[in-house]
Length: 67
Image 1 (cartoon, rainbow, N blue to C red):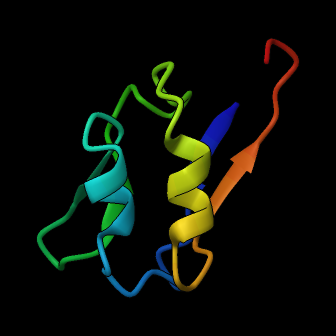
Image 2 (spheres, rainbow, N blue to C red):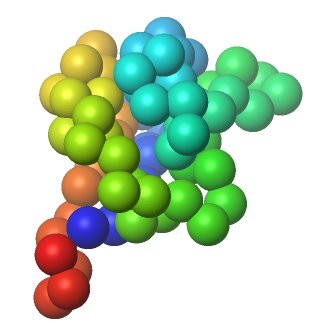
């Protein structure tokens, strides 16, 4: 799985940060980002829930060959 956030859609609600702080953080503008090196979800089971909970659906989960 590969995680990405559409920064044009993100409104900084931080639902993803609350759900999975090991994968998501907020930048200096208050928008959510994926922590460098955690783009694969770092084995965190709540990543899918974080994507579902995003109020503007800015989080994309892309399946890769190894997931």
